[in-house]
Image 1 (cartoon, rainbow, N blue to C red):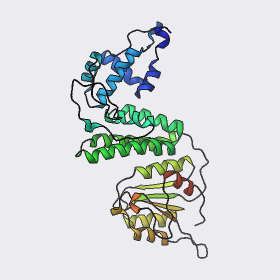
Image 2: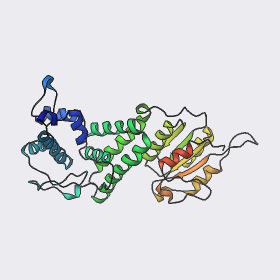
Image 3: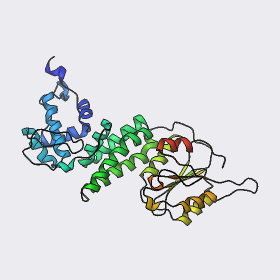
Image 4: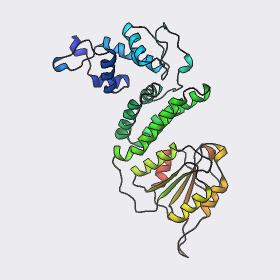
Length: 320
């Protein structure tokens, strides 16, 4: 096989490395890390040797080396110790790297590794591109469960174990996950017509600030044509009660991330609320959700163990 037959296009190389074609063009323009040769029409064709340099560049930037220095080291063939997003070892290093930079991803999909590499590099454009592409191609629920959550957990664990290092990685990744969730209706057409039913009200418990799981549920219900009302973080009890009274929701999801924010009294007060004319009074289905509630919900209330389960339950009409 000749060299031109073995060479890859920029798109193929970008997919292989987990970066965007724009990033490749930027590295070529700024640092001279382009292909050694181009075909007619100036099309880029990357040889195995070219790709090896780019792989080296990715490992170095992921370990925290500034892009300019990483490009210089990659072009010289000087190695780093490990890829912090994957933990894969490299050749012995001429620069010592802290092994604690390895993110604890474990046995996960390849898409998680690409997203983790982009997060560690603080590559906002790459994170946005990857997340939008995945949601558009596969739908929100599988991407949330198999890519977003494992990557977020890995970064969160690293933050907890590293004395507040990586907080900037966790914040940027969370922001782009949130952005992708809110953009989901534009990325993937609704799979079912909008249901003619009362909305599902989504609220965090009064002292709970974590909203990403509720944002995922909001987007996933939207794909299924279920109307929602998102109240977001730390909803005071009286505000929650007022919203239920004013909207008459078909269901109320109460999210708690930690045991300290769960509260059975809140769930029971909402579950006891009634509205409508005499003889046809209605109540909302109340779903205490999230790890803060423990393994089981308060007696008599439903409990869903996953986003997929919650979407299936809430997409089924409830008589009230």
